[in-house]
Image 1 (cartoon, rainbow, N blue to C red):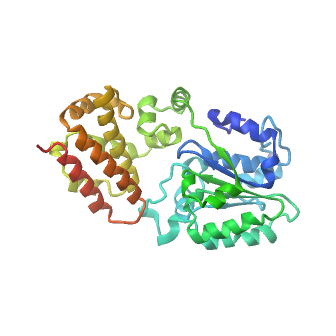
Image 2: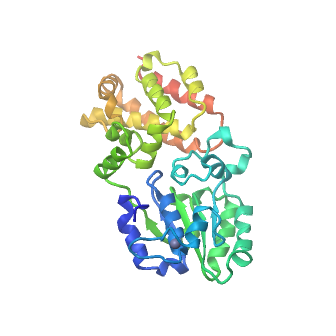
Image 3: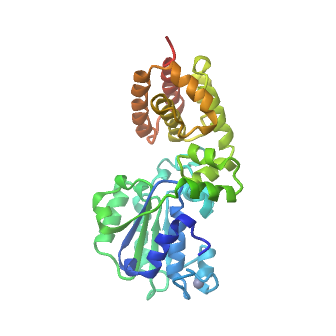
Length: 345
Ligand SMILES: [Zn+2]
C-alpha cells in the first residue's frame, strides 16, 4: 500500500484484515509528526472504497475513491479546528505538522478549538445527508482540541452510537481527552519509526543531514521534513545561535524576532537544548543538537548543573502555560533572561 508510511504497514495490515472496529469508535494516538492524520484519512478512504482489497487498500478508481479525492464524499465528514482547516488548505501532508496556534492566521478567538456547534452539526450528517443506507465515517482531528462542551456532545453520540457510523478520533495527547471518551473507543497506539527507518525515509525525501534534522524535530519524521522545508529552519538556527552565547544574549530582541512562531515550539527548542546541556554533563552525549556538539560541551562545562536542573523544571511549567493565550513577547523574554542568568556569576 504505497500511501502508508513504512512504519505503519503492520498496523495497517492488522486493521485491513479485521474490520470488527467498524461498529465502534477508533482512537488513533501517538506523538505529533508521525503521520497519524494521513493514516486516518487513508483508512476512511479505504473503508468507503467500493473495491477495497485487503492487500492494496483503496482502489483509487471507483466513484467513492474519486469523491474522496475531491473532498466531496457524501459519507465522510471531517472535523478540525478552523485554524487547521484554513492554514493547511486541505493539504493532507501539511496538516499534521501545522501549528494550531499560529496566531497570524487566526480570525476568531476560539478557532484553535473544536466547538460544540461543529459536533452538533454531525446530527445532520448522520441522519439526513449522504447515502442514507450506507456506511459513514466521521474523522475528528486533533481530538484533544474539542472544548468541554464539544467533548460532552460527542460523548452523548458515542454512548448511543448511530448505526453504520464509524468515528475516528486522532490525538497527539490522549491524556487531554475525557476518560469517558477514551473508554468508549478502541485505542490504537500509532507507531513511531525507529531512528534508522526515519533517517532512511528522510533521505529519500531529499533531506540533507537527515539524522541531525530528525533529532532536532524530536524524532518525528514529518516534523523533520516540515522543518527542513520552511523558513522555520532559518529561525531555528537563529535561535540556537543566539542562545549559544548566553553572555551576549539580548532576550528582548530575540523574543521579538521569534514572535511569528508558536510559543510552545520555541519553548520546546529551549527544553531540548537544556536537555542536551544536562545530558552532556552527566553522560558526555548529545541527543538533539548533534550539529552543535562543541557549543553544548562548552556551555555544559560552564553552567551550574543544579541551576540548570531547576531551570529545566521551570521550562516544563512554561511549556504547559504556553498553550494558553498570553503575551508571547513578555513570556519569552522572561524565560530568556532567566536562561542568560544561568551563566551570570
Ligand atoms: Zn475505490
